[in-house]
Image (cartoon, rainbow, N blue to C red):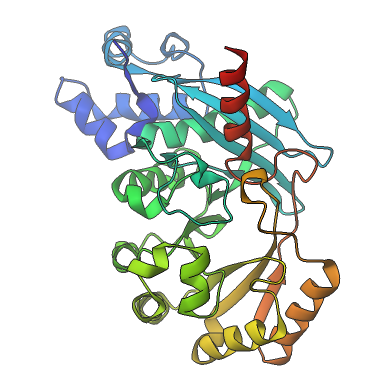
Length: 356
């Protein structure tokens, strides 16, 4: 019988769970320290916790519910992990090295139903949500990997941009965020965490009201409904007329900057008229909006899309800047490996199916 991940409990949930079974709050604090500060590999390593408490935890929870199935390492230091879950499903997690620190991109679902026509994540449809423990455990596996290297490196940033739509797994997402931000644990600063959504407007309102203080990014990718619906089928259900008011609600209530992600597809959405239309779309929101231009990582199954050349990227960027839009071009990581999100998972599943 599979056990739930101990990492799925917030500090408050762990404290309450132990209290219901007759254990003091101080023991929950010691367990929490063992998980996130000492980063033990087994409950038995928590030598400062009462044996009866450890036996109880071991009977109900696991520290490892996934295993490393495959790993790629780029020349730039990016590590892409393919994890196998208890039910046999595969997910991806990525460690990226920046000048400002180490960032981990986590996955929230097995597969994706959003159906962006350029994305490798949606090549295999969603079969289930990940539990909050499975999301946290991705981060912990990467941190244990760093610990084993003996360089004293710590994960400092998190992006929730892996396989799946985070807001379609909202409760587990919020639990995950509260766990990794907890000051007695990993204590990753809210300003160092970014959650990306394809634009589930109702959940943007919920996310805003939750006051989690983490950064929000919206996968926009087109400046009008016709084009956005063509490349992102989610826009048919949630067009810009629904999405933009949700963004306005977030901006007005939080006064936090928001990132609009815009992947550049050759001769599809990368022309000067598209840049001008995008600038017009966000004209009244410019002080709190940054547009992040993303070079496209080609996917074999989406051969209709090509990578925009550098001169066109520069021209698009310059057009936005001249319109007073804050923008940046995403620094690429892992370009020499399966860089596109979901690409490694899809390739390994196909390769293993052929071999059997």
